Length: 329
Image 1 (cartoon, rainbow, N blue to C red):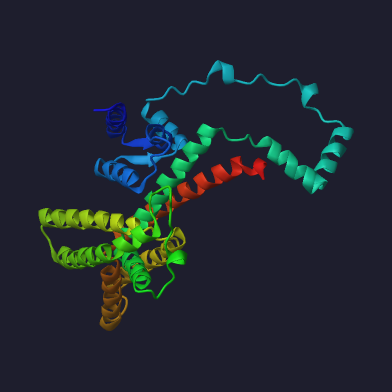
Image 2 (image 1 turned 60 degrees about the horizontal axis):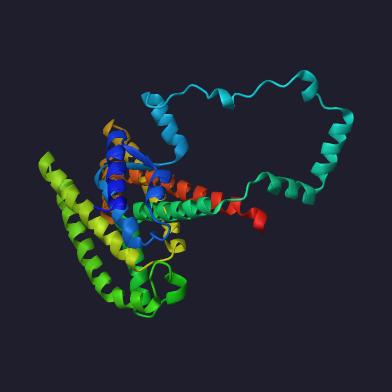
């Protein structure tokens, strides 16, 4: 076992014990050049299988404080001495000077830029890796839903058939060894396998909603999860642009909200308010939404919540990188 594998094993043991790892901990173990899809897919798959969350440093500190694993006593060196009153008082001249500076947009911009520290090379590398990890985690949470997956597969089919432009739909990345010819070569096989996986999931979900035995339901869910993970890997090999995935978030949120509304209305009907025909229509609509998503109202609500958390982490990582480089503009 090489040093990297030993480090990963140690980190996974820590993650299993705590239930989470931070992005910085994972970034430190990934070599600077190791942002390949295969490497990150493998790592994310392992973390998911072990039930280990990836969270930011602030959230990790909060959890550790709550569990008593982190000393919450402030460091004496970090406690600021209170300033004397005369040092905090502002004269009229000071206030006028501040006002003049605020009224000058260019001066304000330069002042703000001066307050933002330039990123070191190591910080840039870590943020780039964090962006890649959070991007894949957010995309995965979206694409694991059958509704989103089916739409993306339909788009990729149109690319394969020449009905949609390749360059506007698929991202070619030299650093990830994803060249146009390579992606086009994968498409027919990947799309055929994706069709098979989706058909199997539709079949198993139909059985799942009728199954009453807990053991049977767990087995069906395990099969669904396994196929979904494989399907997302196949889609990621075809490198569809994030701009094509991101709009699907809103549609999933809308479906999740509608499912919640239908459940509420059905409870009202069960309480004796409303007729049989209206109730029958509500049940049909709910079943239709479950059929196109292969999700229950509860599972889709949970998916959209996690999806939004991961998307915010992705956006935050991008802001941190761009904010740290603003002074270079």
